[in-house]
Length: 235
Image (cartoon, rainbow, N blue to C red; front, top):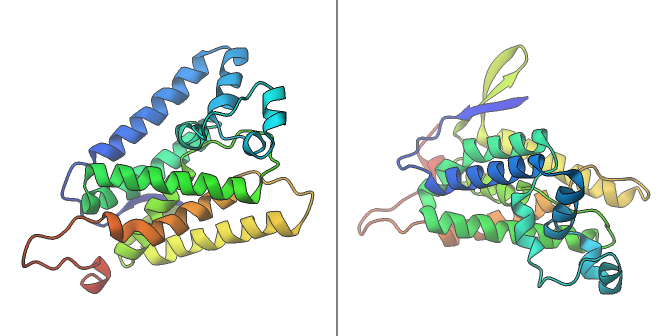
């Protein structure tokens, strides 16, 4: 089940969305050209390693001195492999433009980064002993999905479900996405010894942050005009 596009109209160029995609792609491609002995330490340094902040003595021992939590931000622009990068950028491409349209370029960028920071912090809280870097834009993108969920619940998301293409309401597609994240996150806690393949709590943290914060970043409508969520006038 792969989203192809959405049906929500966009009335401005999503410059911030495009810029985020370009930056993530450039960083990933650049790291691919570096020798492993160079790229791996960079990912460890700029990816968010939870144990680095939970146990400063361990971090100093392995050569990861305290960085003022900078990696909570820089980790949002790193990705583990091509599939990880493509999926994240594809979701940002489909859903980011409409949210940026409703917020404006700078407000959208601030919203995106804030959701990412909260998402990474929640992942650290629930998995403080993890020794490997947490990387990826999934957290802030989850915040974007939350904003889309509430602003465009009845817009259609066009999905490729081999061998057919179907149109489903955004509230159904994104609701299923949330259920999957919640299931995976809780399963990773309930079953000790299980190794989570993804930072599920970062996904949920980003979505929760997006839900709580998106209204604070929406553009104010012109005087005399009341802007409403698309759910109130679109079917």
